[in-house]
Length: 482
Image 1: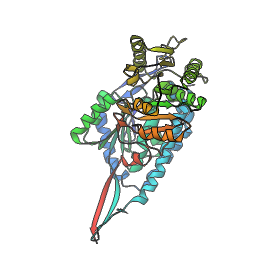
Image 2: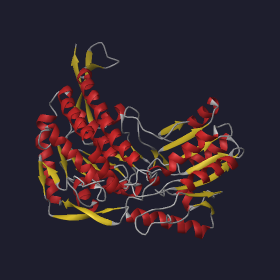
Image 3: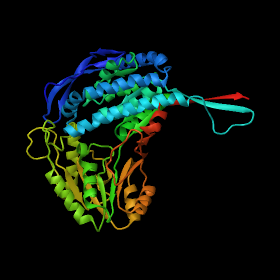
Image 4: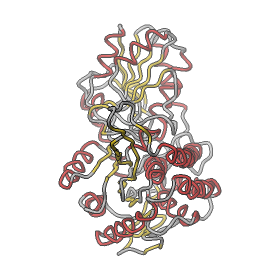
């Protein structure tokens, strides 16, 4: 892949900053340190928030069309640096080439979408309310929330940052970003994009470091008006408790244990492809991974056999190998977590169809076999808990009602997929499932103008589309006497 071009420092008030030390970053395919990233401190967070607060006074007053100009310049930088960014994603995150391309391209598309949304925001100001009393007239305007903080995950670091950054910049907010500690370099590229775009100093700030120090400093800082977090449900609960102390706004995109429900009338090839993509893409490290397969009894034997063949012929390898279809888990911690679930499956006596251990042929690297268990009991740890790895659990069902009940039998409600050629069946399932995004005969891709977020313990609020923008706006109503 050649020599990596990395931005290794923090970015505060328009300047690169060496921080208070450095942290080694591991290549998950080799388990070797390939670079070090600057380590920030609570004092760095305070400086970043001060810079964001100062910048907000002018950035928040710009017209949306003016902000859009900067955003499109950032998009141009991302697209121009595509090959460099692919190499960073492959080395730091362990993503195969096509997955890295998808992540970066999707990120640019989101910022571009919100540049258009920023322009439209100008036209929405001072809109009359729908219902008025004869003696009064009311209008609404939308104002940016202020300086906001992002605490980001490691599974799709660049893309999920764009989901927050796009609407925040469009709304007129300034931002302080804490990248994931294990995947900092691709997120630091947002600072490089801001610099290349001439974004005013302080509008975008990045402080690298641990959640314990940097994350806690952000959640407790009185200068931030909102914390937007993507990650595990337990951490989200902890953040929600902390921001409640000064009544910050909050956005939480948390865990998932999504079902994919396949009916007897489904196209077999389509169903097999959707199940494959839903659980093995990004090594199953997706919050919307469809790790629970509910398949109707008639089609189950053929579909399960197809899935076994797909899993066993999948090419696992270092992302530098262009033929690789699945890379390593992104970190040692996640590798150990997944291996722990595979050990739990042995203890539970689950029926292993294929996989179930470390991928063969690798002396180093966090590689796990694509794994499938069949006839998994509903009380199994693997059926109920989010694994975040390439592990599929399968159950069969007879009736539509049974499938809906089983799909909803989880504390999460982020996403779901239904595969059937019968529109009435699809409608019944879609209306019955408790999930924020449901796919009908479709891959689990996410479009910039759609919504993203979940029911139950999968989070609070929605990202993307107009809902994402509204999460960074305050609504002001002006009522006057006629």
